[in-house]
Length: 307
Image 1 (cartoon, helix red, strand yellow):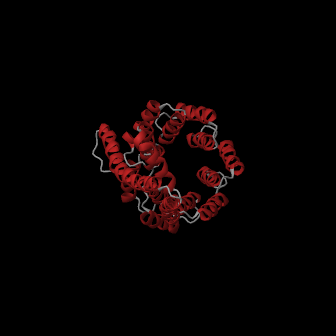
Image 2 (tube, rainbow, N blue to C red):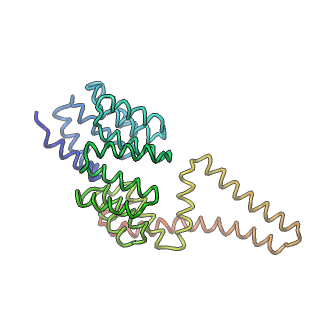
Image 3 (tube, one colour):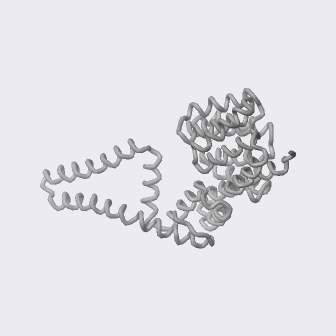
């Protein structure tokens, strides 16, 4: 059966972040062609996007049993490793993919992403240059340049690449999210909101879009802003480090209050104790209030959400 058109449509859905539509079409294709390694591999990638790791691994094993030398499958393995925070494995699987197909752009771009996470900007940019030499008009490659320059603080260049990406494909989720992030960085809240709304209307469960929406709302609300930035920073530390930070904060406030009390400043000591209590109350109140303003915003999208 010739299903090239359907596979192109699947890839188009994936490029636009319309994962549910891609999954539905892939299941339809697999019902008539269950031994398609490509379909199983693409389905695994879609499941990675939805963070369904075990289901993705199951589909990937089927795909590899059918076509063990299909380079893209090792890119999906790398994506799964990234979800599991096994950074070194990501590079290894990308290298395996490139050994099978030196022009596997997804593997090259994923390597650049990992290098950027490691603050190895030189190798990150070299990977993007390599991808651009293979497909200079590829929207993912253009977005990769934009994301690189945004991460390294060159907002002007990031904006230029975001603009180019949107010209090439106005419906691309990556291009719209990149532009949203750039506009937020430039302080253009309404422009940023326009692009994030565009993506959420297509993909209500996009983690990146919802995170950007939360960041935008935090900038619009002083009460939420400080809590959002602190919470976002703590979330990057991992459970163990986050716990240590919070415990250290508690001990610091108590030690400072005790030292000030011993110096004879009982009033100041009480104020420090109340300051810690106030911080706890602020955090306790901020969480439900933040959820409330997010739900209010999401209600504008004409679908029911339970975030």
